[in-house]
Length: 98
Image: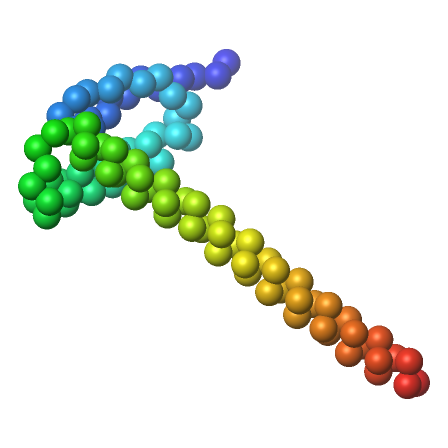
């Protein structure tokens, strides 16, 4: 039987009850903690009092990091592919001389 876990996460002074798989608990708690820390940072550094604005800024921050990782990953894959092609050409050249 698939057991579910009931937890409560606090984000921006609100409690969110969730029913999750036990394997998700650590990730969700870390995510909630990161959101809380970032929200406090925005509130302190930018004197933002509206929680919705703070949460929107947090969402933008996390989403931009996620998107940038995808962009960086694509660039790394293109670079690796270029190197593999160059290596293949070098090997082909060496083998043709044998």
